[in-house]
Length: 626
Image 1 (spheres, rainbow, N blue to C red):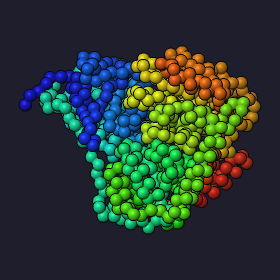
Image 2: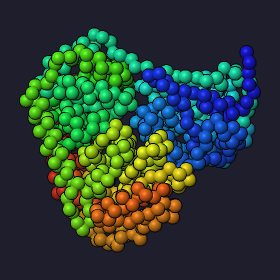
Image 3: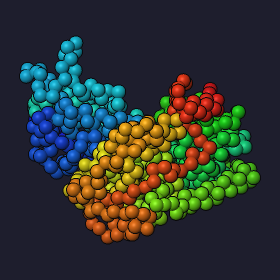
Image 4: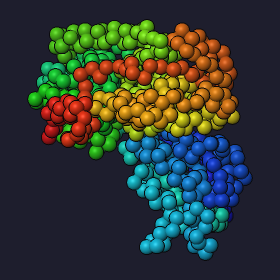
């Protein structure tokens, strides 16, 4: 058997460069490059390997380890999980900075490969700089904290261990059911050690992603259940988009008349103006989708994991005999809510169901009522887009301006705070990949880095990053990377002087927005926004900060100026940050939905007592789906 003598790091880079993923006869290079920040734990290993053969994997410089994982995840999501990036860091804080990014990728089922340095396998120089010592476990390092937030974890203690570990890592990364963050922890001495690797390890390898179908008998039972339904409803999740099942969904909806509500990850499964599109469902849902959900007798979940936002904390589906039919490639998700599980690819399964439902449609009266609700909701969106609120605009008006002035194929990116909920309700999606919101982990700081990943995945699209001041302050550094790589983003920085989302939640729970304002401490009472209510505003200029990072900055004081700024941004060839202040107290209604956030059972405050009574009313609506 032929062999090639390489260091472990050199072998890993070469192996990753020849991995491909095939679906529907189309092959995709799977690892598109490597983001990295170098330190003593990876500079002479992975760093040397990348520098020695730059044609194998393109190296991208990052500014924050968490941020580069978000870039990779954003790229993978935009590419429907058919490609991703590797991310390398030094040991210690460089590695642990990636934990949040790893958790977000795993929660959202997005493939990302993590390659942090690790302490010496030989243990000769222990303890080295940044090494965590544990008196009762000799081989522990900070990388062990990744075990709960990754789908596959391994530590390469000898160079030959790379062969089985790398193959196992690729198996998980390319799995549509089990994918997420994958970690190979690389001791810094082992990275530089040489081994005679089998030549076959470096041959071009194609991993195949098929379209498995559920058992025929299960499909027959599902079709029978749907045919017996009076008020069926489809809940379209992220699996619809990842499996490229949107055309199959549209055909099924057109032929049967079953309406569709969308999760955050599934938004865009139907265009906003499709006759069957009820829009967002659940805690951040539309009035149309939530009213239909309450009376639905059969819920067909496609590619959804039924998070608490989707089910409105188990209050969304109130029909006494509601049944669930769950299409999912993941067995664990398919059996949620004790549904009839159709374990298979979303596109193939929808096509199979469509055949079995041939000639069957929903009742004409039910279809008309859904269409009427949809039309009423469209008017509500237009109202919120054009409130004419002042002197500061409402956040819904900002979203409306961006939506109306962006192109049909442009992409909106967002993550944590109140904007994802407002976007879920209000954004008029026109393209299946035009809506990119990370809400599975609700990660503050994802927005700019995730937007960069979207732009990397499809440079021809304009990318609009919607970010609040709270998230911006947590992670704005990848603005520099976008400029360095000539990947233009248009960042709309919505400034409400604090944590507006939690402030609103706090007020709704009787807590008066405690601890959510960016102001100097005052000596007043703990009234609205707590100890900082009456303090002077902090001398923070986020627009100036963005300018200092190299972005072209435009300040917009109202909606008219925002519209002008959005038009001007189209003609600028580098990343633009548009700073716009909004009224933090002008929110979007919840539209008959509920989200369970516990309230103190005993308290001195009358506001908390009132919130507790309202909470108990919500609890009474919860359902056991058994």
